[in-house]
Structures are given as C-alpha cells and as structure tokens.
Image 1 (cartoon, rainbow, N blue to C red):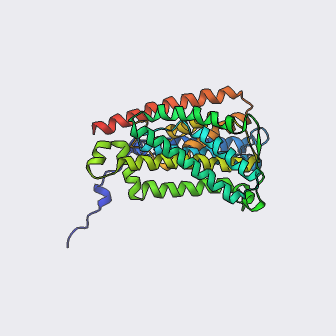
Image 2: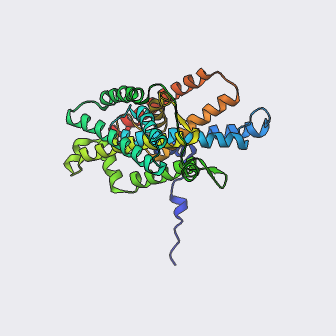
Image 3: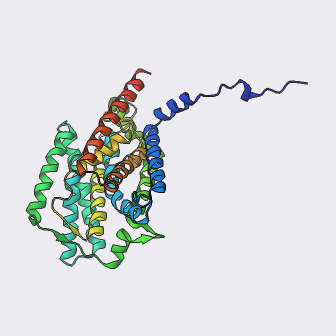
Length: 339
C-alpha cells in the first residue's frame, strides 16, 4: 500500500513578511494597502465620533460620489497615455474648451444629445493633434501638450471671454448624467462603468498588451510587429475624449461652465496616476491603481474638510504622497530592470 503524500506538509508556507512583499510588488498593491488602511481609519473614526466626524453620513457619501467622477475620467485617459509612455498636460484646458462648446451649442438651440458628441469628437481630435505633433516632429509630449494647455486655455477666452456659460439640457440628458439610480449618483455609475471598460481594454485585450509593450520598450514592440505610432495616437485620442467626457459630467452637474474651472486638473489627474502606481517611464500600471489613486485623493480631501483643516494641508499632503509614490515606483522600475 503506497503512502499518501501530503503536499501541504512539504509546500513551504509563506510568512507574513513574504505576503506583504508580494502585495507591495503587485500592480496597485501598495496603493491598495494604503487605501484600505485609510478607509478603516475613517470608518472607525466615523463610528466613534459620528457627530464630529461625519464621514459615514449619507450627505458626505453623496458629495464624494458627485466629486470623484470628473477627476476619475481625466485620470483614466491620462493613465492609459502614461502607460503608453506619453503625457498630456492639456487635458484640463480641453475639458473646459469642449464643455463650453457643448454649452454654447445647447444655448443656441442644439439638442444636448447632439452637442455632447460634438464635444467628444473635438476632444478626441485635439488628442490626435497632440499625438501627431509629438510623433511627426519627435518632440517630448510634455512640451507639445504644455503648449496645448496654454493654447486651448486662450481659445476658451477667445471663444466666449471670461464669462460663465449656462448649460440647460433637456431633462432626459440631465437625468442620464446627473440623476440617481438606486441612490447612487449617475456620474459615479458612469465612472465605474468606464473603469470596467478600461480594465477590459487594457488588461484583457490585445490592444492593452500593445500599450504596455509600447510604453515599456518601444523598439522591442516595433520589432515584434506592434504599430507603436498607432498605439500612441489612439492613446492620445482617448485622453482627449475622456477630458471631454469629464467636461460633460461636470457641466451637467453644475449647470454652467466657468472659463477657468479646468485649471490644475491635468496635474491632479497625473498625480492620481502616479499615486496609483503608474510608472513615469511608461509600460507599467493598472486601472485599479488609477481608481484607487483618485479615490485616495478625494478621501484625504474629504477628511481634511471634515476636520476643518486649512486647504494648503491638502496640497502639502498630496505633494508628499506623490514624491513617496514616485520613489517607490522608481524602486520597482529598477528592480524590474535588474531581473
């Protein structure tokens, strides 16, 4: 009679330190750990001090769900482009410009369901223009899109001056983008749905493999037959499209567009991606990381507001988090290069 082998007895068990190391080296592993710890702290504080720290109140949750999607959509587009090895600093200006075009069209009698696609097409076209200039003249995308940031910011003022533009779409459009479903804000549902689409596209589709290959090693990707120019152009177009979509969400929620409302959003979007574990060199990152990076920024913002802390505390904390995340990501890049 043969002896039964107990594989559990001969398979070495991983220690807690090994499990923690495995988690930290996973895509978005570090930010997931930080996010869980922060959420646990907020939930415990909310339960212990419900009157002084209203983190768990329905009003606070509603504010969070209305605030997250705009930056979240910008970060999704910027994140895919970063994984492809490029940057777009113009998305904040594109967000404002396309929203104003849409609002002006609606103000002139165009149905919102026709005006919104026009804004989306303009956003994608601007993204393609950024990509074409970057690739055609072999320029750093940082420089090209910095010029785009200033150009489209000026175009907003040229188009309508420094005047607020009202946006009054039909009730169906308004409900679709700013209503609620089962108590959940429609914009947040859009954001979650887009996260799932981007996850499928980036992590479960051949296109995603090409994006990672292009950002990781463009020469090697070209050698195996990947059209890296097409991949980068597509990523630029997606970034512009998502900037325009963020503009639709914000404009519908507020009911108007301010000429300077997109200033600084491009840096916040890139910051969310860096905090979420995306490499500044390209070729590494995850949609989960982008999602958690955005959520962490807004959680920290919310906590500071609930604690009535000065606004500059947020800038200081986010700046520190960006630097720490960059150092950590750089360490992972070096470790990956040495293996």
